[in-house]
Length: 114
Length: 115
Image (cartoon, rainbow over all chains, first blue to last red; front, side):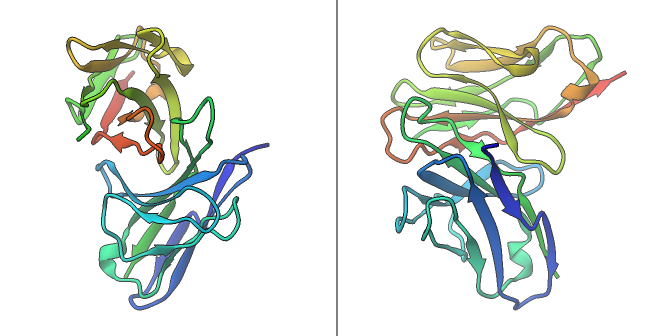
């Protein structure tokens, strides 16, 4: 079944640790996105990718980085986690074509940095 | 620049009552508009979308929304609320023709359904 996956779902980690949030999709989509969502707040786009080897910064500045080496995989990395990075991170994807503007979301990773 | 305003961060209705969640948009060009639902500890699920076809859009779970250009609105309605409708609802706007398919989200409306 075509879907979008995020791991881990929950992560509690200490300050200064390096973390990677995984996002994979089996939908064959070329565009992928990372959003940051604080409790009770809207989603803010922090990274997006048109396709392999393409990454762009989103509307909200973030200390995280992303890579897109494979079409289906779009991991997000924080080199040194800080409490200010505590948030929910949502990955999404969309296709080029008829449903071009429809984004499909993964279940999210809730990150807590202590 | 595009923006979305959702009036009412919290809405409470009784089971069986009408659900009305408000969304107003700002866009310099005719927009594409979306409603997403988010259940606790889950990602966002698309409820419905307006992409310049019919102004009254029907979605999943009995929801519908009407695009009103004169009012720059895209309010979400459901005739009869069910307990399972309790969730957070996000309105979003996108610009047709953009290469990135970027969505601009509202701040969300948390819907509570009372028995």
